[in-house]
Length: 279
Image 1: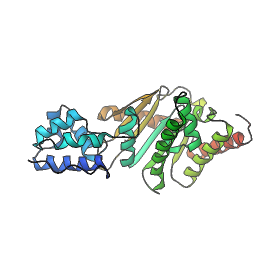
Image 2 (image 1 turned 60 degrees about the horizontal axis):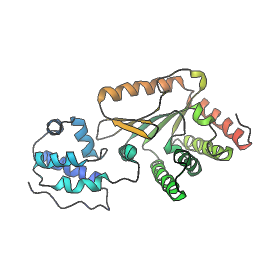
Image 3 (image 1 turned 90 degrees about the horizontal axis):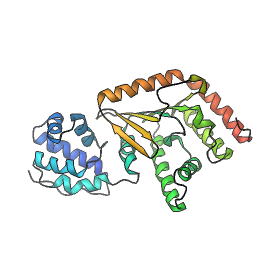
Image 4 (image 1 turned 120 degrees about the vertical axis):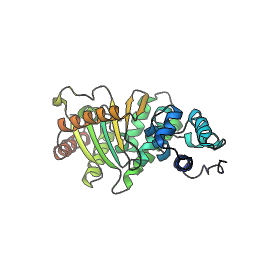
């Protein structure tokens, strides 16, 4: 089957490439599982390529062209699909966020990116890259703020964040930056745009102590979990792995303060920061 014309890179390359993959697979009369077997991946992995929640790498594009008889269409176009303004380890997760219907996140040492203010994001970026130029820092902050536009939609994705008390107590950027950051979280929660819980110190040991966890659900693709550490991260789609981390998240939410008590604590801390009375 001859391949279609190259995709327009000014549109949404990953979504368009996924739609072309679905079309070619169905035309070939193959299921996602059958294509996955020939690529040595799971059927859910193929589903994520079709939904645009996974970037298509050249090795998979080459195999898809062979399996589906699309000449070199996918190999030609996978480069546009792979382009991202985010760092390699986070690029797939950032793309998945834009298509998620629900995001559940536990943050251990910093306020989640979707809830950050520009000043807080700049302070975090400087801490991560202390020798970077201001131009590079500005680019990082711009990218992070573009992600927060997901919350401009009044209903989706549903965002539920469990934030460790340590992230709120750590003075990042100074008291003024922290006061603004916490007031921003309060504003989002009060307009019902985010569910926020605080996991306080007295909750004791818990399954999320070693890093951050982000669970994402989709209308047209299997769920994903993104696990993040220092300058590293990985996206997992194995159903058993996703189920295990979903259980961890439910345990964290059950161990945290209720949303109402969490907002009361955040407001108290914001007032302390505003008056430079460090908790």
